Length: 312
Length: 327
Image (cartoon, rainbow over all chains, first blue to last red; front, side):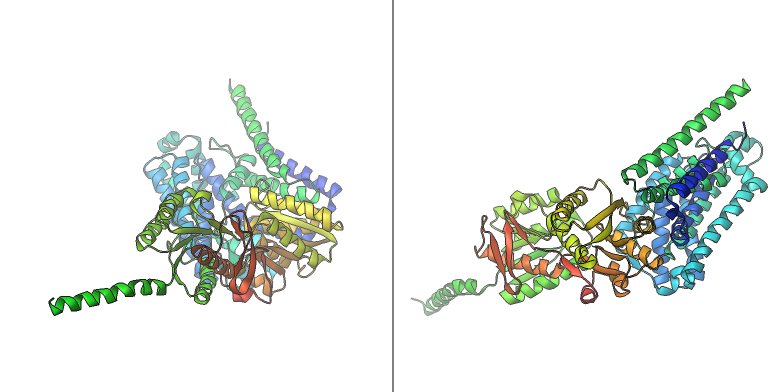
């Protein structure tokens, strides 16, 4: 079977849904609403790229939603103090990198299981933010919105930025040694170590990268509206993990790519607006998304059994 | 008899006769506890409470935790018991948590009223209830009907489809729609997970899926600015009207831009005012369980249902008044 079977099947599923929408509810494809919806998913794509790397390296980071919130509020407060965006973006990325480094140190340095470490940091960051911010929105100056561009230009910039990052990671994971180390560590950390790869360092760097991307994504989100809600990004971790898994990244590590994560994200993200356009009750939304995830996991299970069977 | 002893006796008699006179002069001491002292919502409550205290000639002590902290609320109640205040009014952070301290206060003869967030019913005489489910549902729907001219399509953005309070509001709205506004059609109810960003995406899809949509109603506070941002980005300001529950500060920008028509909550100043009036009336034995109404100075008469004093209809913030409120 084709080694890109999973990525291709997700893309076909996405294509079928879009085709069905074109027939049943062509209103779905009006340019302005569609651009607005896609722009809203641009920051999520950036976080999903990071999550793909994390899962490929056989780790998990469920604190990304909280990291995203903390970076959003910090970036918002700095922007509200009059910092130019040219400084706000690197500052948010640096804060994200720091948060990622904390996770990375605990996971790679102390060899603790990432699900427990990031569960703890998820709660700590979220509650810390609640304590400090007390739920109050941060109001941003007008100059922040759409980077000070027009709405359409701003939206295209954000979409372009997200796609550019996707392209960079898509290529780097194949062509750059560091990208291949991530696969090696995720497939078999011990074998990678014997091959001369510093597995713990790779793991640490992947977490730092994840935090940095969460920081960049946070600023890509705050420029889209004039105020930041402190609850922003809650549930984001589940959304991106689902996208990555649906897109064919194996939760057991070592397999998958960011292109699949991209397709998985689009597939899951189009469920809600598609239902709205088909006038189907919202109760179905999460059910369908759950079914898609289950289907992906079953497909993954079958693929692994088949490849094992082939070897015997 | 020694003249000095006689003099002392005279002084004592004089002092003794002064005591009841002083006591009669002593003002009633009313206390008010917010969930958090620095919260603009409660600062606005305090403004109303101060006004009532001035008008009624009572002393008002306003104190609470600096952040929402149930344990700290207990401590403050204990202090007030020691101080021997007349009435304690509390917005409870934790229903059960505060109740032990309040029960103790009642045992010492201190009267207790809750406002904004209730404690257990047996530890207070009355709860000043800022909004009933029916009041909120009817208030929102009536405002929607006014803006839509009583006909056309509208959609609702909620927090989650299972949230108890929101389901109850929707139930009341269904009843009123059938009764009073048969020409209005609710085309969809979409969940936003209490996230402004998701509310925005939902509103965007709702508008493109329902081209005749005249109004978006958000029944969770993050939904209101989220829907407004979607309408603004779609360039449909004025064509699709936005109303919803919310805090003034989160919506000011959109109200001034004409995207959001009205934001609904209760008048927090009135809530503080009514609470102090109720506390004074309770201290003077002017209201008892079973009373059906209470008069609160300049605000007029309010209904009492059981042990709930009802603040009444929700308050509508719009371009004309929203700048007066800072929370």
